[in-house]
Structures are given as C-alpha cells and as structure tokens.
Length: 371
Image 1 (cartoon, helix red, strand yellow):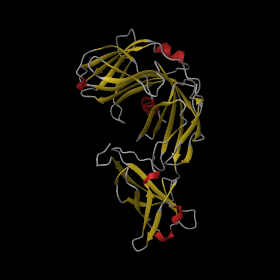
Image 2 (image 1 turned 60 degrees about the vertical axis):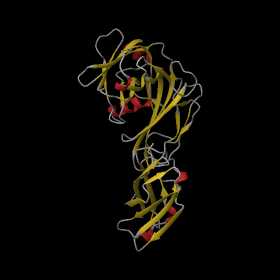
Image 3 (image 1 turned 120 degrees about the vertical axis):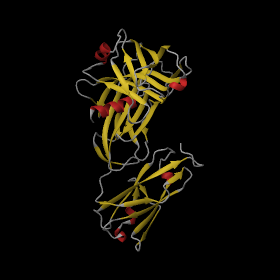
Image 4 (image 1 turned 45 degrees about the horizontal axis):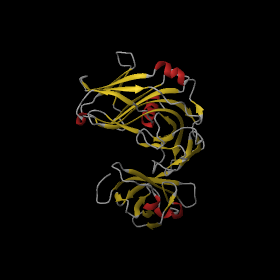
C-alpha cells in the first residue's frame, strides 16, 4: 500500500489520547471533539517487522462538529513552532491525523525525537485564527506489548478468494497487551472496531465487496491509565466538551487479501426491495445473464456473498430471468446510512463457467429511520 494510504489506516487504527493540562475557553458548539490522541506504533506484515524502521508516531483527532475548524497545529515540548499540521481526512469525514515514520528503528529512537512532555494542539480556522488550544500531557508512557497477533484466517499475506462474509481469526497471548483493535480498509470503506478485550480471537466485519483488495490490521495495544475495560477514558474540558482520551503503544500486524475470484460472465442483478429493516426475513433477487440462456444456470450453485445458499431459485425462461430468494438471518446487516453491496454468484451447468452480479441495499431501523 502506498504510504499515504498506510497513514490513513494508522490514523483510523488507533490511537492515543491524552491527559489535558489546560484549555482555552470556547463555546462547545464551535468545536465538538470526540477523541484525541497520540500512539507509538510498530508495524508488522504477516508477523514480520516492516523493514529496518518499523516504528511510527500516529496522531489522531476525531471531531463530531468541526464548526469553523480548518487545521490543527501541533507543537512539541519546548518548541515555539508546530512540527506538524493536521488537515481533515477525506474518508471518513471528521478525522484529522497523520503517521510520522522517518527512520525509527526502535521505540527509544522514536521517543528521542518525540520526547515526553507537554504537546500543544492549536485548533485553527481557515484564516489561521485560533479556535481553541489544548495542552496535552504526553508523559509516563506505557511499555511495549510483548507480541503481535498471529493470523489464522487469512492464513497468509495476499491470500485470494476470501469470503465476502468472513470471520477473521488470530491467536495472541492474553498477556501480550491490554486490548485489541481491528481495521479493515479498501480505501473506499472502513470497518473499525476498537478497542476490544485482549482475549478476543476473531472479528466479523459484515459483507465486503466482491473482487476487491483489502487490508486487515489487528493492533495489540498497551494503554496508559488502563482500567481493565475495553474502552478509553473520557475527559471534560472547561468548555463542557467531553471526549475520549488515552496514550497507547501498539503492535500492528497487517495482511492484504482479495475477496472472491472474478467471474467469467458479468450478470445483471436487481434486488427487488432495495431498502429493508432488520425485521425483513427474505431478500429476493432478479438475475439475468447477457448472451447466455438462463436455463443453463446450475441452480444448486447459486450463492449470496460466496457462501450463503439460496433458499429458493426458479427460472423464468420467457423473461430470461432467475428469481432467487435468500434468508436475511444469514447476513450481518446492521442499520446504517451507507448501502451494502451484495453479490450473487453461481455456475453454468457443466461447471467451469462462473457468473456474478451485484446490487446495493439499504438497511434502516424499523419505522423507516436510518441509523
């Protein structure tokens, strides 16, 4: 992955958030911070340290209501000029962050450049006017985790043919760190789960896109002032703004993977009801195959997402269309504003020729309200 893509994953992936020493008063409505932090991160690829300089300093700020916020200047202890300026990430909106990874071969080498002390965060508008200033106490950092996770599924880096409804699994010692976090990213959509218990050994992100490249990141995390639960502490500044905070040191293990092989024939798929609720029992699809007789489809081969078999499939030869029904209960579809992309695939009779088609579906809460 390109460096700028990697930075986005680390910024989402986690996270260190810190004690606040002082705050310049400002009305909460002008700037609503959700999370703020700094993390030291060692990067592994499929269990091996990434190159000679695997350490980075990752800074993350999440803002619920940015108001006039345009950029964030950050100044190191004892300095008068910012060493980095953060701008809003394109995906997802509301995140400011960076990953600083210049020649740090060890945690001590990283800390020699980014010393303990008070870091100043200046939140500024487009004209460089100061909205708010936070002084962050970056001291008494936790020690390194003892090991990264070891992936079981996917079983290796760059594995292909991964299910679009996967359960990713790994192993790790319960003494390796305080907690785990997962990020699954294809530069279009991000699944983010953080933090969870160190005893967790799997995650199920829900339907992924067919025939897409993804990156799976699992972080073993040590957190300053860890309370034993899978969440960060919160702090309220003197404007009344409450947000999460913590310091973390992380071991990241990453693996790339690709969902499903590309089909021989591109089908046209139409999901009949493109908006459903969690109470919906069935998904009914109409599928057509350009330049192929629909009667040549092997009905027993039809699947949703590569691993969910059809409850019922019938051929309408006059219309050259398949009508296929699937059970919603076999999918992990939580209400959300963004659509899910679902893929129906199969083979022609005789085997060897595959087909697939995709369509979007929206899942809303019962009563018609989007989550």
